[in-house]
Image (cartoon, rainbow, N blue to C red):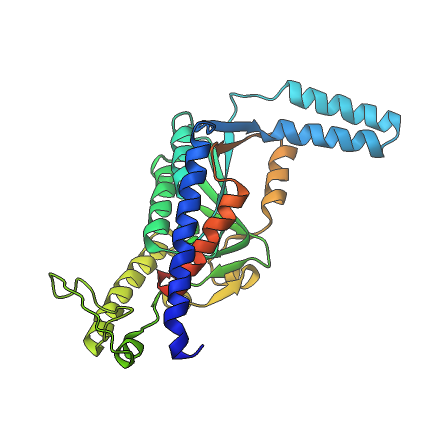
Amino acid sequence: MLCSDYLPFLLKVITILIAAIIFLVVMNILKKKKENNGLIIKNLAEKFYKIKLKMAKNVFEKKKFKELADSIKFKIKNIDKNAPKTFVLNFNGNIKATAVDSLKREITAILSVASKDDKVFLILESPGGTIIGYGLASAELSRIRSAGIELIISVDKVAASGGYMMACIANKIIAAPSAIIGSIGVIAQTPNFNRFLNEKGVDFEQITSGKYKRTVTMFGKNTDEDRQKLKSELDEMHEVFKDMIKFHRPIVDIEKVATGEYWLAIKAKELMLVDELITSQDYLMKLYDNGEVVYSVQQKGKKTNVIKKFSNVCDVLMERLQNFSIN
């Protein structure tokens, strides 16, 4: 894109963002009365048995089906709700980790009834994002560990950057062999329009109190001192990220993996970033087959798919203009 095209491009992006914000505000107002901020709690083991029964009815001959049906009905009838439980959560992360709002409510609900014999199984998908969002999400997961409850995190597709910051909190990390793991680093990036503005005779004024209130900017002239200050801040955040991994996974050679690279889980296991190669559904099916009690816990009132998609577009546009995230 030519330099002369940047300002019109920026104005278009700002217009789109304003329209997106207005759209989201209106949609939230319209939905407010209909939202129910309670929890959806399902017995997944019972649900699995019923699906198995339906399949068997269609594929087995009558005698074999009857034997299996009697066995399944017995299991459903004799589910011991006093036995240790596994609570299943889902976290689908975007740039801002907005799913943390639901996650904290789900964790609070679980901790209100869970005992130290229970487990929490989190199915995590995230390519990472802002430090603020994923730092909070990691802190919320730490509540489970602090309560003495085992936390298992499963990655079927990706847990990179801030996603891995969350994953490293777990007692155990499992992943599908082809899942993407790692990207342990921090990045900040932004376009700079200063030369363009100077050529057009446009002055940019920025008044701050505090030497480092603002360093690298989009419109001002950036100096080597500004860049070095920002770099030192990124290095500090990177050290915090590394310290988290060292604390929760001391078996990891942190200097070897904290390069910003990512790996398929099959390689990540060799690097001790992952404990076992298995998909989330395979893990859950083992629990069902063992007759364990499994509940899913999900916050009601989450965004509709349309709003989610529109919000994600806004996130991407903002990231293009100014990115400051774990990566």
